[in-house]
Amino acid sequence: MAEADLDVTIRQIAKAQHKSLLGAAKKRHAELMARAAKAKDKDAKARFKLIARSTMLNATATAKRLQTSAENAADSYARAMKKALEEVPAKKPRKDKEA
Image 1 (tube, rainbow, N blue to C red):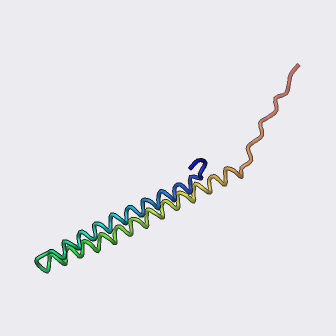
Image 2 (image 1 turned 30 degrees about the horizontal axis):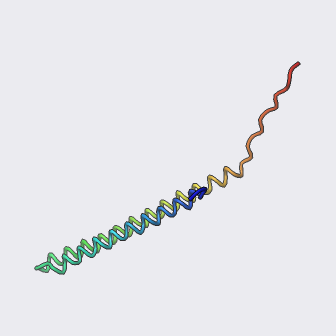
Image 3 (image 1 turned 135 degrees about the vertical axis):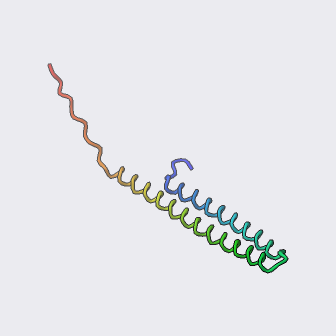
């Protein structure tokens, strides 16, 4: 990644975090659904299914906010770098030689 733009790097890291977060949420969802399948009474099954459903909803919303935040940061960085490149550096005043 030598000389890679940081906005691309920010997006790549966010994508990896997004994938990791959703993977962990799917694993937790599967565990809760397995508990629901093993539950003895109807109330316990319903409770585990509700927790599993809300786990996925919350994880999806969190992943979306994480992705949006990373995209905003990457876009902001890219705009800042573009603006910095467009700015013309101020000319240094010439020093007059005094005799």
